[in-house]
Picture 1 (spheres, rainbow, N blue to C red):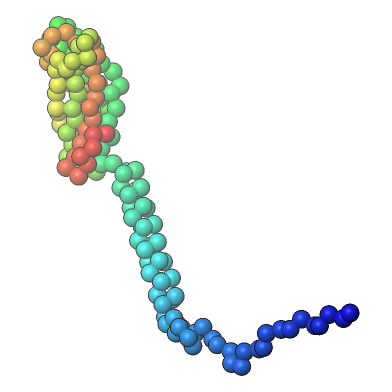
Picture 2: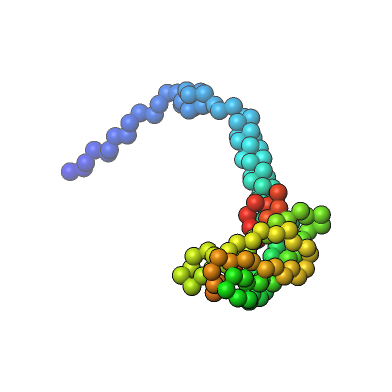
Length: 142
């Protein structure tokens, strides 16, 4: 008993190409897509570099180095200020009472280097904090 050999389907008489059937994509589309992505990547990298430089080099920086509660209605603060070239800055210090409420506040125009200021208080302060210094171009206190 010999089994008949398996039959294979007949070969198609014509081959079909998908590009012929559905149309080929335009050859410039891939190049345009790669170029567009490259331009967007360059713009993004440039923006990140600019933001890092701009926020990494502020026009003014300040630090509270010391304070002293001078009496019932006064406190003094020593603020070190690093002004950039030609920076027009304003600094703010705040005196706090034992219950953490604000009992005095002072805004002053600093000079480059050490600034000693006196804050008038409505009652005895227990601490002084530096809110920070700002310029017209740098609204976030530093």
